[in-house]
Image (cartoon, rainbow, N blue to C red; front, top):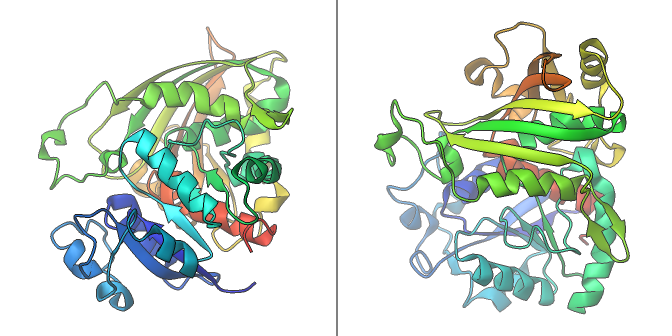
Amino acid sequence: MKKFKVGILGATGMVGQKFVTLLQNHPWFEIEVLAASEKSAGKTYEEAVENRWMMDEIIPESLKGKIVLNVERDAEKIASVVDFVFCALSMPKDDLKNLEEKYAKMECPVISNNSANRMQPDVPMIIPEINADHMKIIPIQKKRLNTKKGFIATKSNCSIQCYVPALHPLFKNGIQKILVSTYQAISGAGKNFNTWPEMNDNLIPFIPGEEEKSETEPLKIWGEIKNEKIVPNNNIKITSQCLRVPISNGHTAAVFASFKNKISSEGAINLLKNFKGDAKSLGLPSSPKKFIHYFEEPSRPQIRPDINLENKMAISVGRLREDSQYDIKFICMSHNTVRGAAGGAILLAEMLCREGYIF
């Protein structure tokens, strides 16, 4: 595999910083460009993240002196020197949607961590182990954009990446109804306890936009390509509540599900334990060796002992049992800034490179 030159748009924010740390020493990808808003542009990366660096790892020496470019003003320059970009920008949705399209039309593929283009009918929203075949929509999107290389592909919302993978092995039993409550870490808001001390010993029962994403994005992931667009699976009904909890990293979900074809708790657990994921997702540099880890102990999964499994790319599931109102219920958890954000986007990019969509 050739070495791809990549850019990070929004490199100074929490997710952008996570991209920086995860891409260090990546076997396929080399950071060529760091870009951000006007506030950071023109500074060295070290200056731009001064007093804002939130990673446990130190800033890579090779990037400290790199000049941060302006994501808008320098877009043409950025697109000309990279093979593709990761987008982790925080800006108004319409502006971001237009900016990502601008890069794609300049023949620069965009792997986006943002929601702006997720529900576009010809933009794939992919969890590689689950719906890799949605890559096939990319040539149709290119036709709309009139591009040869440029396109947009997105990863899903961080919270659904803990519970959709846990339900997917049971999909053939005909999921009909899902009730889910998510308990989301403060890093999902781009903050830590130093920048958000109000979250100490606190719980906020509302996260703007999260419940809508939790109820709609899975339907697109479980949808299919028809008539040159991804048609969501509207046979499944989802209701959710999303809460912000005083945890640094890690989103947990309590899930209840009913099926057309009833399944026993034992049968469901066996399916989870034996699920490997889509073949196209296997053997990539960021692929977990074991995608889903099922815990028999009633007190697991837990954030502290389980969040770092498989380089923070695993899905942890436990307490699966039959329910009096739904067929089954269980608990699941994943790392929100790695599997749910930067790591999931990197895995998606790896798959797109190996399958020839990025070249």
